[in-house]
Amino acid sequence: MNLSPSSPTQIESCHVLPLSYVVTPEERFERIESILLQNTSQMATLLEAQLKNEQLMSELQAVRQKTHKQLDEFVRDTRASIEDLLQFGMETFELVAENSTYIRGLQIENRRILGELRDRQRNNQR
Image (cartoon, helix red, strand yellow):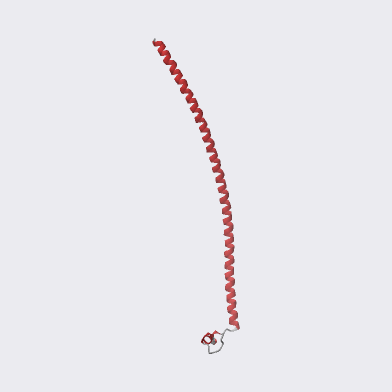
C-alpha cells in the first residue's frame, strides 16, 4: 500500500476534527454515565419483561395441565358412554331376537289354532 501524501484516497480519508468536537474528560464521563444509566434502565425493563414472560409461561403450563386433565376426563367419560351405548345396543338386540322368536312362536301357534278351528268348522258343517 502506498502511504505517500500524493495518493488521493489517503488525503481524502484524513480528517481533522474541529475544536468543537473535542470532548473534555468531564463531558466524556457524563456521556458514559448517561449511556450506563440508559443501559441500566433498559436492563431493568428487560428483566421485568423476562419475569413477566416466566410468569406467563408458568400460567400457560398450568392451563395446559388443566386442559389435559379435562380432556382425559372427557375421553374417559366418552369411552364410558360409548361402552354403555354398546351394552344397551347388545341388550336391545338380544331382546329383539327374543321377541322375534316369541312372535314367530305365537304366529305358529296362531296358525295351528286357526287350522284346528277350520277343521272343526268343516267337521261341524258336515
